[in-house]
Image 1 (tube, rainbow, N blue to C red):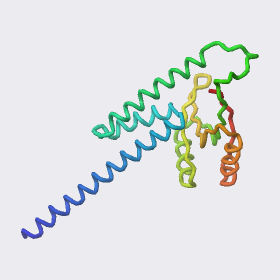
Image 2: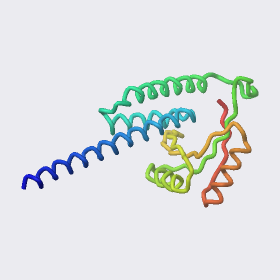
Image 3: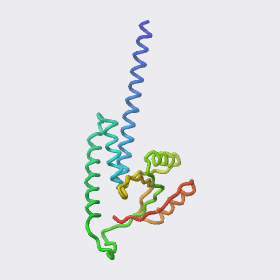
Length: 176
């Protein structure tokens, strides 16, 4: 009887350590995703994912790093909104400091569940994507993008690959 009890204790310790290992790997994976979003300059997604991380892993050891990313993303978004609100003459061309980026947009949806399904499908097919929340005429839309490039040829290549897999892909130019 004592042997069975000892085996049960050992089994529970092993199971608990396996669960804690999975928990920490999920934390690490979520944090790495945040870093990728930050490198891609997708600040809205960084805000959303960092808040989600802090809700899901409140006692995480990575909590302070996530908060730093969140604060940095907020500052970057504020700077972007300040640039967009400044008056620009319609005939003014792009200045040398501004850059053109080509975004491969896979879809725009009103329902978040639809965009989440598409993101899952894209991931299964090997495409990384980002969900952006966009407001237009007082309504919320969810935009899913699979890439942001400085080179138009790279954007066209990704769009072709997406179309081969049965997705609609549109290249949108963005000035930053």
